[in-house]
Image 1 (cartoon, rainbow, N blue to C red):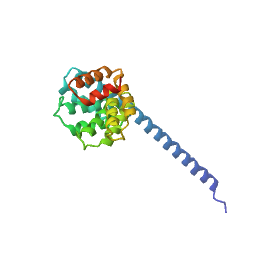
Image 2: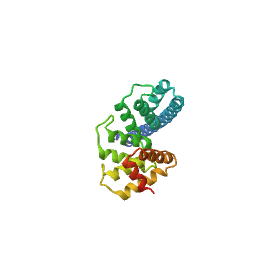
Image 3: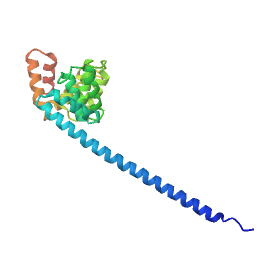
Length: 213
């Protein structure tokens, strides 16, 4: 009686297994490639929508800008998320809605957008669209201030000056005040506003000006 050729069957099974693995690897590679292409196309689309929306926003054509900004924001574009937050915050092209403004600011802030981080800090500080929370206000002011946002630096200095959300520390307050007034983008405006407030008798403004001399 002849012995059954198990050797050939084992080889055949091994070849089938290798072929299946090769097919699976190629299928996974193709899926990854398709996902990468889809992501790139989506990012380009989000950027295009943002640019179109911002152009309309800058022309104060807010009603036309909002749909484009929203479409871009929903795709995860952080600048669009921030700009859409501004629309809800100010009632530009939409009904003013503090909660919606906070949600969009927060989405942008969580992606590291400095202006959005400052706005989230303000929302927590003032209880606009979210419950007041001095600790979280301090946290977001810090995030934005460390990215050289002048308005956040001023707000952070006030936190240290008043001991809100952090232990009072006049030296740190002074450091952040000085950074704020030297900020390239907002420094002159900040200093001018402090001077105007001081001239109207605002004691905090007077103190801040005395600290940055």
